[in-house]
Image (cartoon, rainbow, N blue to C red; front, side, top):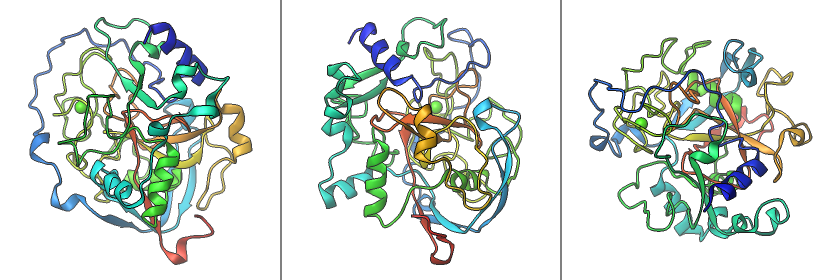
Length: 356
Ligand SMILES: [Ca+2]
């Protein structure tokens, strides 16, 4: 695919969910040495304590941030009812069980089809997904994400980087190349739901109300045990001193205060909220976020967007840097990519409050 085609697609989409994070600083020079031991990610797949769900007792917390990105404002007090949440991101193995039981075919496997006709170049209507492809040369213009994102025909959850790639050996990695409707379908099958942004953020904070990160207020690039992120010059050189280039098996990095893994990094996670930049005047108890009508003006050529949380393996300190609980980003409904997955929740009967 040509750069022109990539640019056309990404322009049509508004490049919203594909790493359009503002650059915090100039990237390190390629090859900048980073002297620290790699995390033994290969030694931790399918850790015994990473399965199942965690009960999150309801409470109040400060959602959003007044000191980080504009879209995270305004910080405000929110009450969340009790719920259960997956300890890890949904894995390829779990998603495979869903597909085997139901015969479900994901949107990436079906293709956008008529839903995008007239709004996207025809080649992008066929089955496929967005795949990160690092450029060979350092990037000077971080606003042109087509330099590292490509539409790859045939990319799907079974083939995250396109035809020829496989999830064999990655059964315990988070499933990727799923759209939000795929995530909803999985959750419904499992008798569960997608978290609201408030639930997700409350859980991600792990009891550290108001902290910048899931582990506290300080970010130390040398401490690569906290999350699967990107080390080195983005997008050319991932030194992977955290032990993983690309996704890591779910549950390899330190859990937060609630025993939840990968609430920062690894893959972005869908929440059920429609996307608007910033927190509107929110209901203070179990907020559901903006309405579809409110989200429509903030959509792209192919419609409104949903919110993703947590950052991914592509977030570097110098780019994106959204491995924080208040960080958020929009994502198109109709597209998957190889850095977005999800986890699910289960609401207790007395805490459902009309949510579904
Ligand atoms: Ca990494």
